[in-house]
Length: 335
Image 1 (cartoon, rainbow, N blue to C red):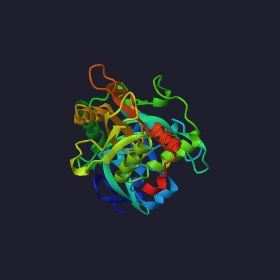
Image 2 (image 1 turned 180 degrees about the vertical axis):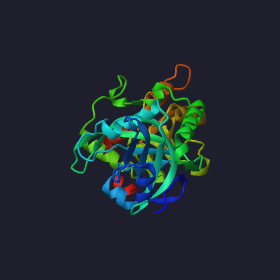
Image 3 (image 1 turned 30 degrees about the vertical axis):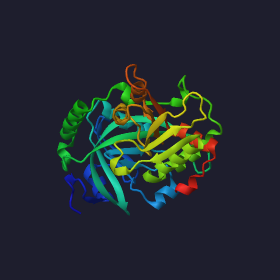
Image 4 (image 1 turned 90 degrees about the vertical axis):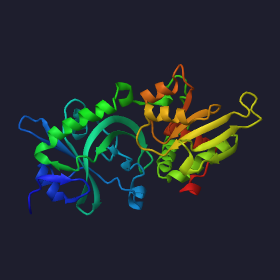
């Protein structure tokens, strides 16, 4: 077997080629390589993020690539995950330009090279396992860099340093953007979730719904909640608005209020940039509601409540799932 000295984006490699070329272990989704002093040389991140029926049936929380962002679940399939060992080594890239080689499984012992990865944020969430027990899980969000499309192994560190420097210059990541907010713990939000196991099970099902069907699911939920004239916009011309609705005339305080929603069936967190773009797409007379199956960064929460801009209501995955649960909405009709 010829020794691999470089990886090309989009090319296929065997498990043996990866492990011998990068001197990492044979198994595991996170495979660090250390120098003689125990410092990270590089990390191989292997995912099975491609959508498939098998992945959906085995794990509704499977890794997912959305645009240029890979949402990756830490190691540990049973019980609460710890930010320790291989999981903890990933966060070293915040301060040191450690190369992360990203690969996605496309078949038995075969992987496609995605490119070098940049860690954007890591956060903890609750998930329901197969036995309907809640457990704490760590998520890592990586930006996939397909350029350069050829990565010589010996130059990977210098390339990573340049990529991180330029990426962070163009997309400054403040501490608030790196942190994920828990809206349920917010003083201005509902803090009591009825039947948290069932609610989280519902969220696990919601993130499996296809995006366009998810918009119609939200439409049905809003109709059940008392809105009238609810409509899903045409995808090609929505300008960032997915659902239009009006508060029913029986509401003494807000009758007739126009409500516009953006709906994201995402695994990765919604940041302040998305909130700003959504605000810019709103009708001048509309109230904005941003709905996601995932979470919001703290920066997104701050931006949504900006003192001098129209306020945006945020509905995260837990709150949305609780609304579905309380409204007894049949999700199976949208699967």
